[in-house]
Length: 166
Image (cartoon, rainbow, N blue to C red; front, side):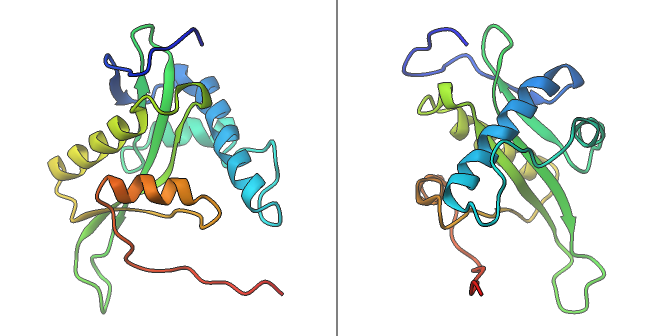
């Protein structure tokens, strides 16, 4: 990555392609390592959430869109992995569709440049255009900066995951 200005104005947000795989795999490692530093009891440093083969399958799946933010040179600066969750057929839930952000990451070198905000807003626009009821994600308590970021974008806590380590 070359030198970057304080703002990234010419971002293109688009669906991921197979040709983006190497960069996405590096970003998957980056986000995993943030989690590994916060929760080394749960995450293994240097690993990724998906294998290259799994990533290729996800890229091809319209119910699991991956959006990437690319700069003027076509370099991928971040991604948002999304998953369609349908609640139709549940006995006690409204028959809605949720767009779950399974993973979101901005390259370490591009943080603070509004890439994450652009990705998130694109996900919201996509969800609205495709009739989703809401957009959800999980944030780790060990990453309070991420929680503050999502709240600054308008997200609110709707449930808590609670644990007791034994």
